[in-house]
Image (tube, rainbow, N blue to C red; front, side, top):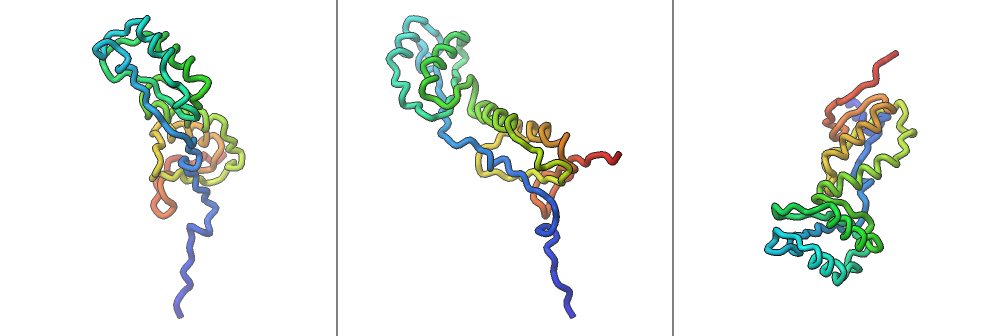
Length: 170
């Protein structure tokens, strides 16, 4: 007589946590100020202000914006601040940096607001393979949030996870 096959993963108390489920929806835009510089390197204040004033900022409605300069030009802080002022009425979020920095900032905000009290003393596995751009820093921020609360932390899939942390027994 054959024994019944049991799905131990399905019957476990293991909770899968997928950062992808918290991905802030919205288009990401990399805004490169290099194109507004003389020969891609020199910022002339009057020309920069003129371009900012005449630019159609409404095209960034509801988008996440990363302000950057892809040339080796030294951009003063006020230039990015000025652009942020113009973007403020339209964009969901404006940062200085690349798209990975933008994702890290977005996930920092999401994770800081998370209520993880429902995970108190539970075994948690953090799902690894993401189809959306989840930055590596988001996983570290999540660990910082979960470690004081959970019983144990693992990474990967339930069938092949890597143990990371187990709360010490008192």
